[in-house]
Amino acid sequence: MLTQQQIEEILAKKPEARYKYFIRTATAEEEVWGLVDGEEGWLLLEDDEDDTDVFTVFPKAEFAEIFKEKGGFEEFNVEVLDLAEFLEWLSDFEADKMKVAVFPTPDFQSAVMTPAQLRTDFQIEFDKEQE
Image 1: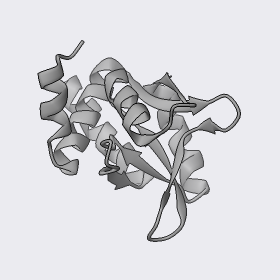
Image 2: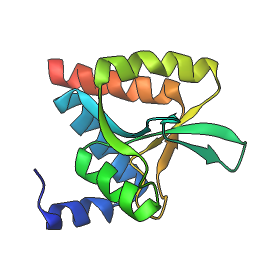
Image 3: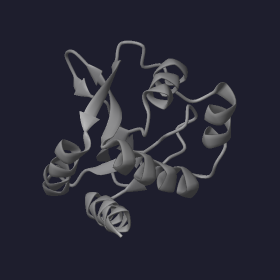
């Protein structure tokens, strides 16, 4: 469990630093977090640049909860997703030309990544853990 100060410090980081934190934390804990609505399914945002769907993920439940409350997604629930399953989903995202918003802040600042880049970065982190 993170302290309020730790949460604020992590949220204050630039998207690239939050992205690295996400990769390290998700790899270590073997899970990612997202928002799910009973009717709509997983929360998808939209990339304004090219109108693609963007799947939203967080490294810890606390950050998903903050985004839910401050981002106006009260009808969604915070849910955990096994990292291995999420990595399998990346192939589907790629086929559907989707991207992934990694660790958005309540003001919607995030690292928007391609599934291929995410898979590569997770593999690099897995390899580091094996050393």
